[in-house]
Image (tube, rainbow, N blue to C red):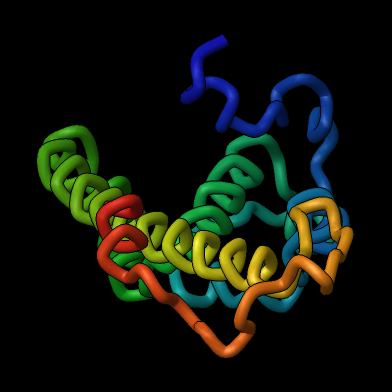
Length: 161
């Protein structure tokens, strides 16, 4: 299975053969019902209603909600997400614009990952400074000067670019 295929939620395998309520969709996706309703009010998703007027989430809606969840988790602003969804809803002619938007967002995520790697390296350094190991063990006798925050910034920045 490709990495891209692994990212697609497996809703088509029976998770939503029957339509789900907003509470069920929220639980399945790890979102709040409030967030899902907000996405609907913001125009990011259109949700069909059942005969009683309740929202009825199927595979299509769950896939879009999962995409929205992941984009928001990665820091995509609501305005950008709204623009992207507008492009999707406008049809196939907007694919070049969608691709450009996704490339821009990917670059932003890559920058965030570089920052997180640098933060992880600094955290690992401080754990080692206090004589600790990544498994939580501590040898305070082996701890060097714990006031030395980040002695080798040049290497730290070089390693995390």
